[in-house]
Image (cartoon, rainbow, N blue to C red):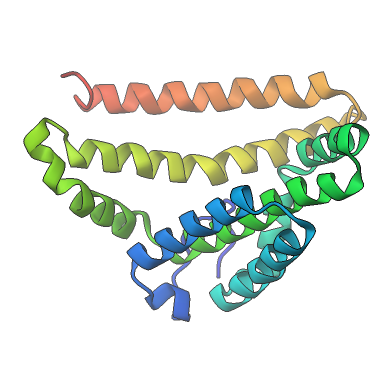
Length: 203
């Protein structure tokens, strides 16, 4: 598999690559609900183990998974510290661990699911809403842009953190967060301009 932005689709022949988009997306939603509705050390530990297994089955390399986590390392460290201070280490593990598990499973999902297949599936699901004025293809496009935006945002976060570290400013939140926000907003505006230039969203 070639290296690319975290979570980019990587062609393959694993079980998850062959599985239809619907069951994978449904499973991801169910696991997200479980993580929120059944908060406990046992549930979080189980989700983490499952996430590792899913990534292994999907053929997600250790380096790719590490890059996914590296992009949110500072945020997760701050969240863990705050949760530990407010509610104890056990609660911090439950919150941060569940987030990490879902991120890894989302990475496995985007790694094994092409954007074209995802868009086609969402469009097909929403086709009955066309009679109510909904344009399924636009909703599917927005969904695909969101999916693409997740790995891109994580990549920008990792690159910005590395740049701050190279300048000896890794402990400065401003040196990390300000450039990251500027780059993310700039990308969002560039995407919007590109869509507008193609006449998408004018009506």
